[in-house]
Length: 261
Image (cartoon, helix red, strand yellow):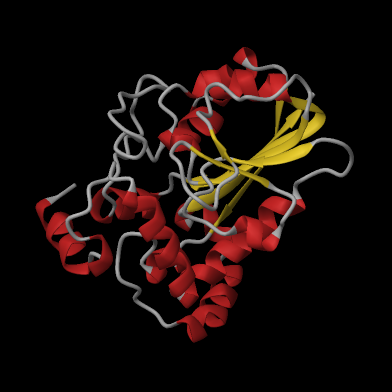
């Protein structure tokens, strides 16, 4: 991160998070409250939940959400099984995504927002998810994506590492949130897409849908002050729809869906 970006991020930092370390157990609960209180950001998460749930197939099997702590998916879809790596009163299970405590073929879907790029050994997750998700089931996710615009934003305004040139899918992690590579989803499914399909033939990359060049940034996300009021959300959503043909240049996020075959 540049010096200018670091100063700007400190200036815009959300006051509730000042002095809170990335691995402080309080952080997830604080971020959850920020999402619920920020009308603009809350609508973004509701939009993401609708997109993820639309990819969930019908039929038998539970639906697992990874990294549920900061969000409110269970308020929207009560049947979902929520999980987190730390104990939180509103989460069903404590688990590590690399070792899922489910029997073979028992899940019809695993879904999450902004989690994959925090998993330090993502190959283990993809392998164990393939064991747990039944044939025809899905893993669907909302994750950061690499474009010319997002590379600038994530490099200058985001506190997490964003290394598009990483030579490996793994990274060191000293805690649940302190280790990450925001470019990891793009690396796995775009840059190294052929390798992914070769290593994990049990997964078919069904869709990559690029989205949201401005809304998340304007909301302030879970770390910064909001830059727009909640009532302006509809305007920005409509504007982004007009920019759909240019998403390969402007998108900051992607919904990636994998189908178990």
